[in-house]
Length: 545
Image (cartoon, rainbow, N blue to C red):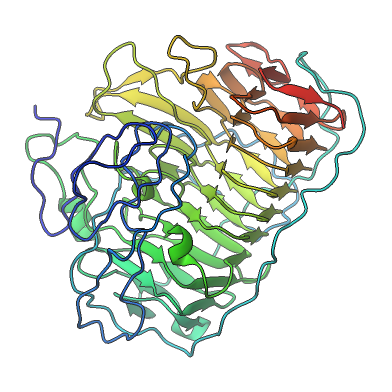
């Protein structure tokens, strides 16, 4: 049975390219998708559409959407190889806690795989409602990662402490229901103000499944608004290779992707959160930012938001279709508070969120639950390894990032070889040291840091996250830089499971930075290969203040 897709219809997937680490793409990019060329330290096919979007102005949607743009990518090495990982798992929910966020149910992972299609056709959208909300609120020019406190080193020993510190952001509730009829259809661009009066907004995308926030425009989303990124479910359902009905690349057409070249301000409240979801049984493509091409209209802000059901599973594909349900490649501060990321899936790194090259970003009082890396390398041979990580979050080349008061529960990283959903075999995650001499690896059931610099991880709960064949039952750090790379204090690590390393695994790489783990962190019930887990392992220097 043929395991690969050869032809597709209007929603044809771009040719999958396997690139060498940190090298430019020698091939011509797919139509309408210039490769932005941020090398990713591994098998990354490159960022396709980092350029400015000429669909930035009118909502007439009759002209061609020139989506290639300048494609000026930041060009620095990215967070590890883009081999995928993570099997869908409902996660281990250990207690409801008090809900400090928007209060929604983490849900169970839905079926189906997704990937989307390139944007080259004409924009057939309808204009968005409301007037432009302006440039939005600036999230600030850099949040201080804080000064380290004193205390003894949490060390590499095993722990059995009681979970008495750290803030639990709570377990999310069911969330708002999506009305069966009514609302507003969006097919081309998103801008202006979205209000409850026009909700739900049923986002179909243009002829290629893309909706754009244009350069120079601002999208402001009011409390209680529902955005249903449904795409064209009938197209998705029909997208099956007749010769390979169980191929993991099936059901990828007809899904919708959001590209941000302007600004976005999601302003929900505790009583009326904003819901970004999909009624397409196979999910949606998520939301992508493109470096400098997404700068200039106000920093991104997400408050009291539910972000769910993204399926970025174009296996061995481009970065914006394989990592981070919310992929924020953005050289400035990003603010995410009192929100929920649940039931999102990526096929390379960062199941829910990737903060790439950001400076001064903060994520606070947010729940990350049942997100996953489910990597399938269709070209892998027996005995090969994956290099995937960050079941929930990646901090990639970030500086001054604050993660405070969040809950990471039931997130996972798993990797497989093979093309058919009925014929997959598990692959381990490559660990350090290794014969290949590779530092830029994967791991981290909840968080993967790559080249962190002066970051703070404080008062978070890590519970029931797992990476059965890889390192970092909760956190993996790679190639740390600066003088103080990450300060960890007041966190709780409870019942996380790994296959190598410790609860926290750190590889120094070529840099000289130190990792700070204070005595206020609590470790309990964590295991690696069925045995009590060391609190921290690896080659990094660990200091107490």
